[in-house]
Length: 283
Image 1: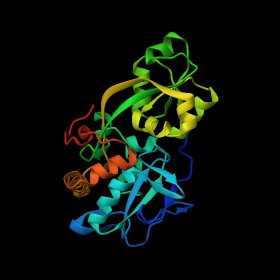
Image 2: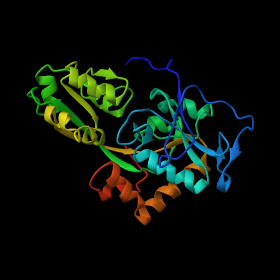
Image 3: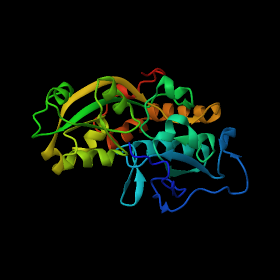
Image 4: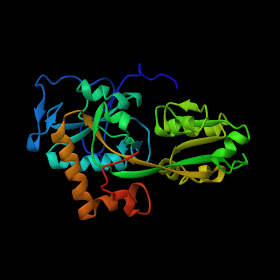
């Protein structure tokens, strides 16, 4: 993977996705007031806003559309912010920091929302919310490649790509591949388009989003769909139980009143009731 640790963090202005998120250059700064609290005594790193770390782009969960950061994750965290009586601000950060919780520990962000799979390894460094989405991995290939499965990639000596530091990359390595690592999901797709790789393994919802574009649908197809038992969760600094409770309450309320289903259909596609599973365990 190309290192992105040196890349400047991008701050996206403190306003809800509905109103639009403006891109601002530079890094967040202390407002001089120290840590504040929101409704219910939930601690916040900056007054008047719920600061979310993410990694752009990762559609349909978060990406810039018409100058606004939007997506399934963004919409769900907007619900949390609304309950707390504040607005959501989004910070674009390198994905590898999500495993360590670095930006949470340094109090640059209150939470992380990045289509992140709940794993035992990650639980050592961060606390997860309840699962909010069940995910599978897809193998997307060039239609001219002759690849019909993940096994075919190896058998036919083709190159496989994956997004760095993701469970898709981990799965590929577990299957004996040495995948080409790309920094972002956009870079993964570019690698497939350019012929740098002939197949990629990445979360299926991302592939669904890509294939909505006719040019992509004409050139690529899903050769394999792999159920790895993954579930996504939002993360907070270890021990921040009040924020975890607030996130879980917003998720439960959204599932109960139909908001979750509406947002799922808006961003993901036809609603799958299993995606609203309240099971706290994930592989």
